[in-house]
Image (tube, rainbow, N blue to C red; front, side, top):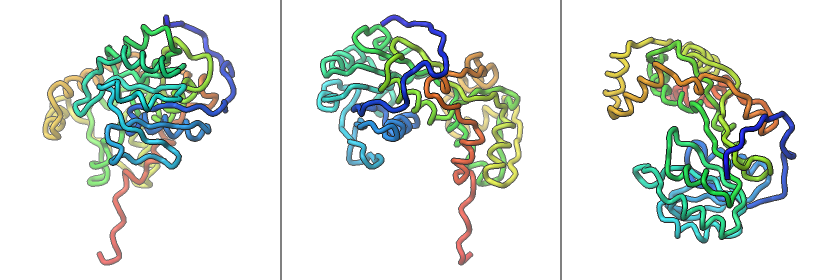
Length: 301
């Protein structure tokens, strides 16, 4: 199905609630997948969550856990039975390798009666996303979120231990998005008409510096958090000490030192698709305040 460029207006899409549908969510234990599952449940839909090991997965009540592996499409045949929507990720396996199985997965999905497919963009070209975009047998939607708000959880150990965040390029701007809003957009695209052949860039409602994020976390935890600006050399040393691979370090230097325009431009897609405003980082910080707070000392101490 060819990509369509459209002007989206608030209220353009259908009602919030739709007839109950059964949706298969892959990557269901991941940061975004968990949110897709939660949003579908909240909207009253039946959710099937794919995992490579059912015995180790924990999902909310009402979710049907099914075993399968995107790298082995045949294992999804039982999971696709009776499904109308399919949420896909672009990597799989223990080493998160790019999936080459897109054409076969889509063939099986069409045969099972799947009508709508969402795919979470992985940050660059991928064979699976290419296969989805080329398929004219389903209504597909590509989700392209910018930086996740949950990335701030990487600061939690330093904040808990020493009340500080140590970062380079502290004036960089980010339109970071709440992972729950990614899940909400996915849920709408999987269950409502009007989203086929579209690519949705997803951001939060505001541009934030590193200092803005630290201030929001300080307010949420009720305790001041210091921001220590690192030079590029100091940051590289810190990342190496933490065990980051050299290619990841190079990526961080590039994206933090020269953030792409899309990552620092606010767009209104979340509200346009879901009918509700995108959540702020202050809201996210309040939801996760416990992660940035040291456990209370026991009475015996």
